[in-house]
Image 1 (cartoon, helix red, strand yellow):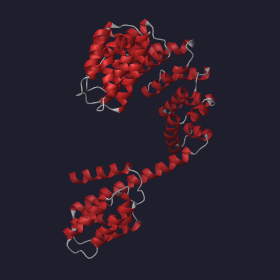
Image 2 (cartoon, helix red, strand yellow):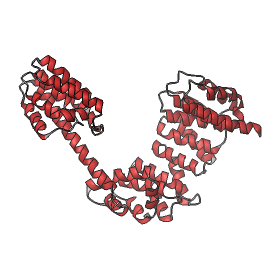
Image 3 (cartoon, one colour):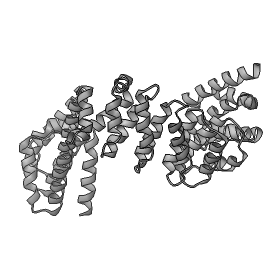
Image 4 (tube, one colour):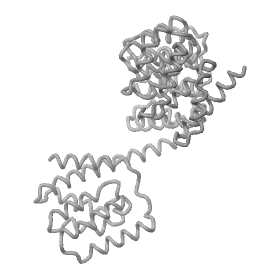
Length: 422
């Protein structure tokens, strides 16, 4: 049964693969060779080899060979039947006759064949469901915007599910889609109060991406949603409030309120990040950022770091936490990079510069993005980073470094060099 479970999960994993592509000429030649080897072979052991080789050619080859492989599902040898079942996995497209033969094997006399047949039928069902969902998404993606918004707010769960996915995809990839949404303020504001939290989240994210400046109705909806009990909705609301006017008292009050809420780290982090984006970081907010960095919840750290960068002042109390986070290889690289940026502003310059130079010379660091992030942090130090110029010059010319790191070093040389020349 364990082997059957492993097989099922391996088959289900194949569901996310792409549709079979047309066979290249060389693959077609190999497939024809293996199909010829199937003919006239009586030894079950010899028969399994071409079957396995066909599977190695990929889903398109299995699709092309499915009709020839189907008779092997009735072979007298159980190992031949089993090997053939293993090969006929999604996303290969199987004729209905092949699927019917697989169903028959669910009553096979061999335990392993029965388990494999059951696992394959389950995987085919998952694959077909996936294809059906993709078809619905494609249809939803072609809907005009008013109909898409209607589907988002409607009672048809299947249409709403598809509309949520499509709206998120288009909002991320299509600026014109976001601009079109900005003309639907009343509809978006209504969706912010929808019973489905995913719809509320979509509407708020659309506001944050679609408007240059939130109109009053949208601001009011986002302020109300900032207290949503679902963290993902509150985070989306605080993101949207980044487009509010800085003089919008209720918007700023909501952001400051959530920046002090340590019980919801992810929400607190977004509030701090939005205040940093709006350049509204006061000494009080800086203190909240330092407090967030001393807490164990990592979700708030990037926002807290952004707030300290925006504050633009030394923050000695934040340095121990920033040094710890940036050095901890168990943390997300993105959080470590944000900590480096904050350290460039909040830390004592000589100590921080020495730390960055040590990191840039440390080739044991497993994620190369961290060293590139350290160079970005050096740019924030500007005049205080001039001692790093020789190292940056060497890195910019190194044939062993990545393109990203070399380009970052060149950018740092340009910025720091211009500051030095002033």
